[in-house]
Length: 116
Length: 115
Image 1 (tube, rainbow over the protein chains, first blue to last red):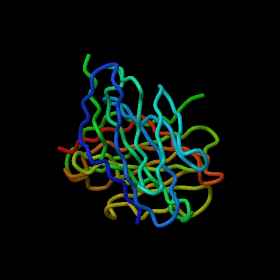
Image 2 (image 1 turned 60 degrees about the vertical axis):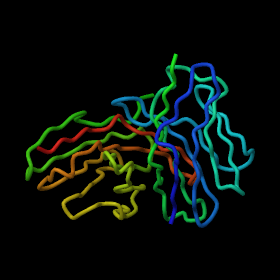
Image 3 (image 1 turned 30 degrees about the vertical axis):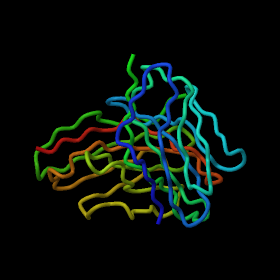
C-alpha cells in the first residue's frame, strides 16, 4: 500500500530565510510524487511533481523539491520564504507501477507559517 | 481556461437529509476524482471515474455515498441520510490521464456541515 508521511504539523520560518517542508513516502514500485498548497477556504493548488529524470524539480512560486530514492524522500524547499507562502502544504504519491490505482495518497499536511 | 468548479460552495443540512454535490471538470479531462478533507482525517480518496470505464469506488466510506458522471463530464456525489461525521470539505479533481503522469487539478471544494 502507498503511504506518505509529513512528520511536521507546522513549520515556522522568518521571511527571507530558506524553508524546507519534509515528506517521505512508501510505494511498492516507483513513485510519482506531487506537492500541493492550500490557502484558507480554497482548494488545492498544484506546485510541482516528480515523474522521472532530474531529481531536482522546480515548480511554481519559486518552490523546488528533491527526489531522493535511497531515503524515499521528496522534501519541498524554497531559498527565501515570503509571508504570502504561509499556507497548508500537502505531499502526495502515486504508484507508477500499479496503473490500476490512479488515486493520489496524501500526507496529513504541514502548516507553514512565515513571520515578517 | 476555466478550472474545476464545484457547487454549492457551502451546504448546511440536517442529519438524515440527502445532499447532492456537483463537480464540473476541466473541459477535455477524461478522469475525475472525489476526495474528502476532514479535520483529523486529512485528504481521503472517495471515487474515481476514467472515461467509460467502471468507476473505482474503493474509497466510498459507506453505501450511503454514491456518485455518477453523466456524459463523461459533470459528476454528482450524493450522500443519503447524512450523518454528522459526514461534515467535511468535499473536493473534486480532474486530469487528462493519458499516460498516468498527469496532474490532478482541484476545485475549490464544497464545505458540508451536517447539524
